[in-house]
Length: 411
Image (tube, rainbow, N blue to C red):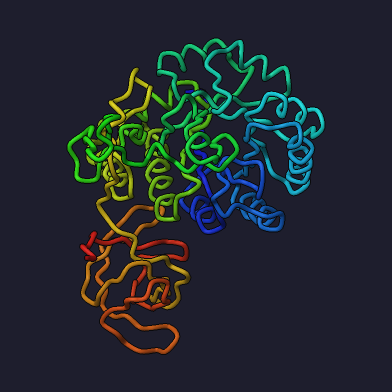
């Protein structure tokens, strides 16, 4: 391992952005109001982006801006303008997929690093060098590459280019995310930020002469998500990742909430730090490794696999539905005098045993009292989401931490 890889986290709005910084991301990628592949995220206007950059740089982190749509001629002037504004604000890099946009942004916005998006589907060193000649600094590798192919490419490319790879999160069913399904079914282009995720929908099979007799493709009361891929999770293979030659580990999830971001970033951050401190001790500490891996089961996710890192992934149809081992209970807005001001997300009761979600890990917290912030009333439970309440927390919570609890049947 030449240098410790950096950890790159997603953010679709300011709260997940702040969470990524608090839980240990070295860099955060986010979108402007246009030209990114997550048009349905809140994204950042110019003022919000400037504030995000300021906060990130104060924390010693970087900000990467997604400009990764497949561009038409009419898009290019606006993309270049956005890139220039981003550079003036202090954005560290632009993530770009279109080869013409890579060339033009690099030419007209000198000083702004260009990272070639996974959408560009770079799978070999020669293609990487072509992008390098156009002005790109980093390649976000195609998700279809195996460990052997990544390691071989890292040796071949050496110090000519930086290599970045996805290590966790949802994976598109199409080649490097270049999908036509959403465009075909409802006119919303995945390649221009408007994907409606039809690969996550459930389907049945109909014989042409029997339209009223649907046949399930897979035995499940919800139908089948035969087109839906599993989620990627590479936590169990962190040592090999650390030695692979990849300079940056990327987490997917600009549509995810702060609990997801904090949990995933925090788990990988602790794993990466522990490995860097002592690789042998990390390998021998089975308790720590199981603890960090179990953290990733707490959040909403599909069945995990390792993508293409070890060859062909598992059958997509096995990824039906989502699962999670814990529920989002509250976000800590502030802490003072051993008391946390919590924005409640799902109801909890006095006497409940919850878990803290902090950069250092999690621990039990029994809810001894609930006080409604607006009225000062002591209550046994609050049923209205986003209500601000105060609960005793001692020194277990800080501003920006979260609470999780058992998943309850809300029927």
